[in-house]
Length: 113
Length: 176
Image (cartoon, rainbow over all chains, first blue to last red; front, side, top):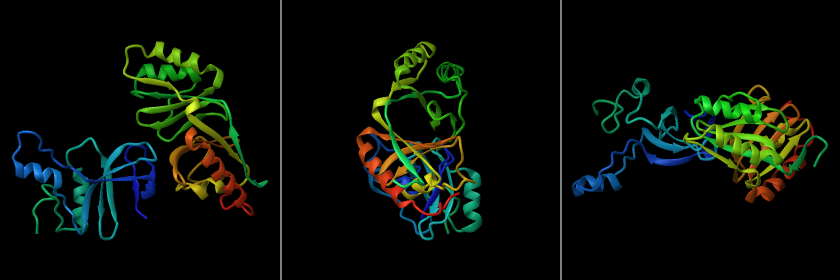
């Protein structure tokens, strides 16, 4: 069972209380952007085997969206953080890198392997 | 229903949803006027079995008041919060309310909610919005047991659910 701590209400909510919202930190390419970046924004998603940054909503609780870092393979949760941000907190990135030195995620997490 | 746990539908409980900036002085003043209580912290319920104030989310409160006084209190809040960005809505008839009491009350809720109801984790004055089997619900604990609220549209479902859970929650209480 996947259990996240909601950063807004502090509740340890299991996944049946939550709603998955897909990949986090997407950058929108709207009108005026070229076709390739618009297609990337609409359709291209990361599907890593390893630590993933995702959006979740505490839908049965306080109803707020938040971000979470969890491993898609082991379901290990590295942490959750507020949705009012453009990037994961530094402490969280360091925590992930301490355990998964080769981790990288789009523009976050430093150099790829 | 067993002797260990009683589930009762509570009729005519007044409830007001109050949304806005919970940090603002006017918001605190509104709660003080209506309930005479302070601002609850995250996951807290202040009050007793029939009235109080509960923390719903970082920008939402639930005021539990006498049914007959709802309209009066909403207009009081409206005059206090004048020109602020806020919402005060009478939700008394939008919700169904149940009281769950008895020695096995914790067991009844633990059967239908993914919540740690151990006395060390959940005690009097705590409030939790969660999932109750298939529907959204919230409950809080006061001196004499738990109060459960859910949408009126699923009230019958929750009544059956809690009653069945209370029938099954016989024998020694798991949480004591």
